Length: 334
Image (cartoon, rainbow, N blue to C red):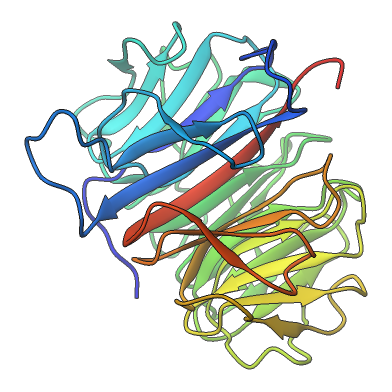
């Protein structure tokens, strides 16, 4: 269920991109691979990073033709982009026109990134060989291994309020505050963690998705966790999305179970399948300016769109593709 190839994670650190577009948000979609892709055919950009400025009515390829895992939008310079790929962490200062590797030969298999909202030069990355951190915009990196029983890390999240690091591993969630000299285990141990998400309206709340053990919630900044699986029959959770305008509405992307939605802050879940032709969901995006609009990216089934909060879905784009990640950027003044 978990594919590891030469993967790329784009972290778009900035605002103000395509400000002349009529829509309030720009939507980014990463396509890892497609059964329809013809290798070596320059006019067939089926993989890479795609952008929509009209709520998914049309998609444009950015020109990047590599395996992309997923990506995020962060506050900071409107020129700087970060990427995580098989050969390290890359950085672009010209909207992705050119890139340079910021890490050394010892850093490979970078899976995900997180930028400190308070300090865009502070970036953490989860790699197959342990978490790494830069505090100078990628000029230097260091491994943060103290206190970890294993190196393999699947996700990392920097708390936007105080800079505390949360780390997802194959054996649980670990926490490292600015005053700590090493990682401290949280109460969520013995579980294979796939994704970490901080609540957009209540920053003390974090959610964790697992392999086979459902979804877990922390209400104290990631220190302690409780399981929240009522109604969740498919318990491998790849992605968690929260509606910023309706903070009690959450969505889960699961393996084999499609999309689940909660309307009570995660206390209970209901499966939302109508119109989905493939039920392995690896990407979700909620559109803040359009109530009820949600995108779901599948593994080998392309992208689907809902305009009624997941009650019904219609195919949108990228037939037969692995849509690995999605992100929404709200432009200034909107």
